[in-house]
Length: 221
Image (cartoon, rainbow, N blue to C red):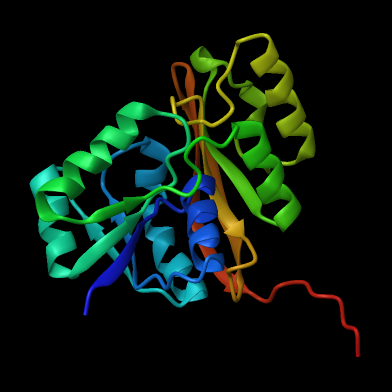
């Protein structure tokens, strides 16, 4: 039987896309982490074990070369992949380059959505999102590193976007995120130990230890 595979870094866009996919009634069989992209995602990739556990969806890791990704998708018997691409045509082309030769459909539920609208949506849905990488040369503020992507940060991004100083989607590399909690999680991810370090204009938030804990719910009984 054919399977649905969601590309996931654990970041806001891949998790938002997964949420919309599941809400639309499409079942997702696997999460797929590709060893490319941001340094912070690679440094924090071990957390996908916790993401997989709290979602109840098996996670698979693959190398970044296109033949390796295609081989993994064939092994998983994928006929559809999900991505969090929102605004970048080159990213869409990358997925098509993977999918077309093996006749796999690419579904990007965020495509064409305005970034600030998407950020506001996930905040309103209750996503708890940590900023794990910033690049000040791309318009991000140094103080954002390690902070939650909250209403204040979203407002700052909106103002910077008006001044054409940042692309608030983060797709161009201004910042990267990791989702600690969202409506899909059975348990939230608690950070037990972390560190921040800088390399030139880039800051990294590395989660060194974490576990799954109960979600704070109001007791209506």
